[in-house]
Image 1: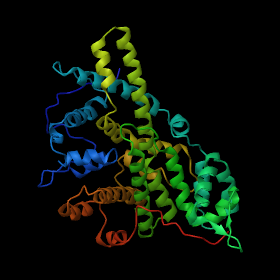
Image 2 (image 1 turned 90 degrees about the vertical axis):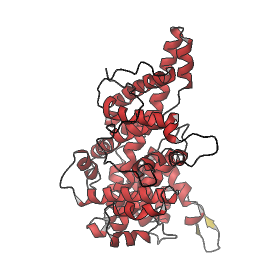
Image 3 (image 1 turned 30 degrees about the vertical axis):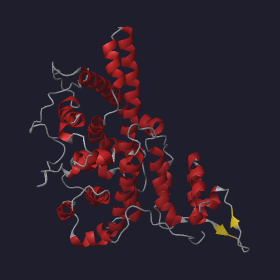
Image 4 (image 1 turned 135 degrees about the horizontal axis):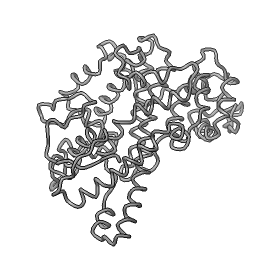
Amino acid sequence: MLSFSVPDSTPNKNDVRRSRPVVEHTPDNLPPINERFDNLLIAPARVSQMMGRRSPGEVAFAQSEQGDARRRLLHVEKVAIKNKQLQAQSEASLLDRVNAELHQYVFELLKDEIDNTEVVLTSVLNLSHDIAPLLDILSVRATSISRIEPHAAALPWLYDDLMSVVNAPKFRRKDSKGKVIPVETLRTALSFIGIENLRLLLPAMILRRALPKITDPYPDIKNRIMQFAQSTGLTMRALADDYDLPPHEAFTAGILSQLGRCAVSRLYFKAFEQAQIALLREAEIAKDTEQHGAMAKVQPSANYLIAMQQEFSEPLTARLLEILQFKRLRLALPFIEITENDQHPHDLTELYKKAKAYAAVRMLHQSKFLNKDEIPLALHKTGFVRSERDILKSTDIFQLPLIENPPLD
C-alpha cells in the first residue's frame, strides 16, 4: 500500500525538494521564482497571494490554509511520493486528515493509470500513433501537400481544427470577383494554409487536443500550459540554427514537452472525482456524518497537483514520445536524458532546458510577477548568453509567426 500521510505543517528547512535546485528568496523575501512559476501554471491569483498582493482582510500566504498545504506538499513529495510511510499527526484537524486521506487515494489511482503509457496516449490524451508520421513528414525539407495529406487524413479530429483555421479571416482566399472562397476539403485547407504554417500549427493542434478540459476550480490551467509549451517551442525555434538543430524539430520538441503535464493534470482531476465519490460512499455506509461532511468540503489541491506534475510529467513525456517511434524527429531524446540525468546531454536537450527556463521568466514578467531588479539575474540563470538573449528579445514567443496568404503548393 502506498502511503500519502500528512506531516507536521510546521516549516522545516530540511523539507526542500531533492529533485529541484534550491533557490534563495530575494531580499524582499519573495517566494522563489520556480515556486511562483509552478503556481502561475495553475492560477495567477495564487502567485498574487504568495507575493502578498492581497485585499484588505486577507491573511498572508504563509499564514493561510494554502500556505499550510504548501508546507505539507513539500513533505508529501519527498516522503509520500517515494512510497514511504509516515505516522499522521494526531492533532491534525478533521479536514486536514480527510484531505490527506483523499489525496492518498488520488495518488494511488493516478500512479496506477500513469504506468500504462499506451492507455495514457490513446484514452487519456485522445491521441494516436498516427501523429508521428505526420510530424515526421513535416520535417522533410522537400515535403509537399500531397505527401502531408494522407497522414493528416489519418487523424479525423484534425479536419475540423483545420477548417476553423483556414476559413478564418487570416487565411481566406478570394476569387477573381473578390468573393471569399469557402474551404471544405482537407487538401484545399492544407494548401491554403501552406507548409511553413503547418509546421507550426500541426504540433500546436496536437498539444491543444491533449490539454485538460475540466480543471475546476482552476479553469486557466489549459491556457497556461498551452502558453508555456508554445513559448518554449518558439524560443527553441528562434535559436535552433545556433545549436545546429532543425527548427521544426526544435519547435516540435518544445511544444510537445507538455504532453506529460497534460496527462498528469487530466488524471489528477479524474482521480480526485473518483476518490471523493468513493470515500463519500464509505462515510455514508458507515453513517459517519462528520467524515462525510468534511469529505464533501475538500476541493482539488493545487499543491498536490504541483507535486504530482513535478514527479511524473517529464518522465511521462519521455515515455509518450518514445512509444510514438518517430523515424526522423528526436523528440523523446531531451526528456529521456533529463529523466536519466545524463551528464553529457545532446544540444537539443541543452536548448530545451534553457528554453523552458527562459519561457518561465518571460511568462512571469508578462504577468507582472517578477520585480524589475530580479529580471537580470533570472535571465542570466536561464543559461542563455547575451547574444542569444538579444535574439530572443526581438522574438515574439507568445504568438505563432504564421504567414498570411502563403504561396499555394
